[in-house]
Image (cartoon, rainbow, N blue to C red; front, side):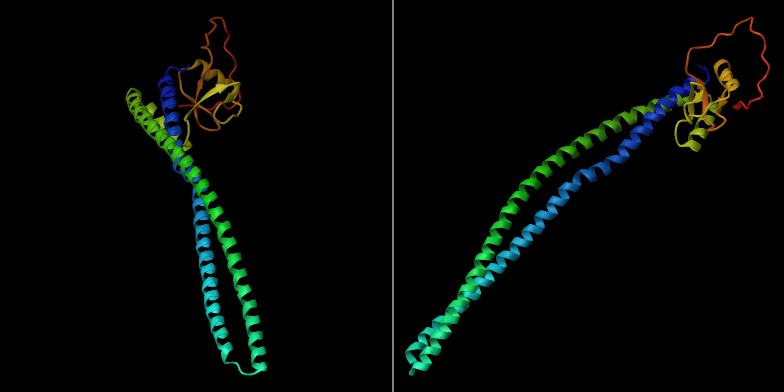
Length: 257
């Protein structure tokens, strides 16, 4: 491995973990909002059902008052029976009473329907309350877990940032500047290993001569495609003293930093 890049490789490990933690913490509010969504929906449904129960109760009371008023009116009609003088008047009175009784039956049916509606809605409210309580408990546990995770990540982040500052102070300024320049332009890792003849960063094939230079040279080389700084990840290469000087390759091999 290129000795110049060794400190940067260690720095990049810290950098990547710091970025990972920041991204994880950034998503925690989104996770919290998503975890709370079923609870919000259950609360809304419960409140809507309670409102419907109140309306059904009011409807039932309205029908009960209408029945009371109707019965009071019917009793007045009955009290007038003693004042009737002719058979025709009496028959008309009986007909009115018959209509009143029929109307009374309509009111009673409406009351029964309203009572049944209230009963069903109250049962639904009880079920929804249980569901809401269960979701509230689950959300509370999820929230506590996410808050604990955030605190742990914050503590780890503080340690990593301290380690990062210490590691940065030990790296040559020009080298660190080059590292930061590549990191700023790419928004991700500035260094990439050479694996299987490819740049591990962009996954493109690297010219063989450049691979040989990365293996053997202490100079810094960049990928000709993604501009990441390259390093050899395998075993060190030992030069053979009897190896003949090769003809320079005509391929583009990138550039030294």
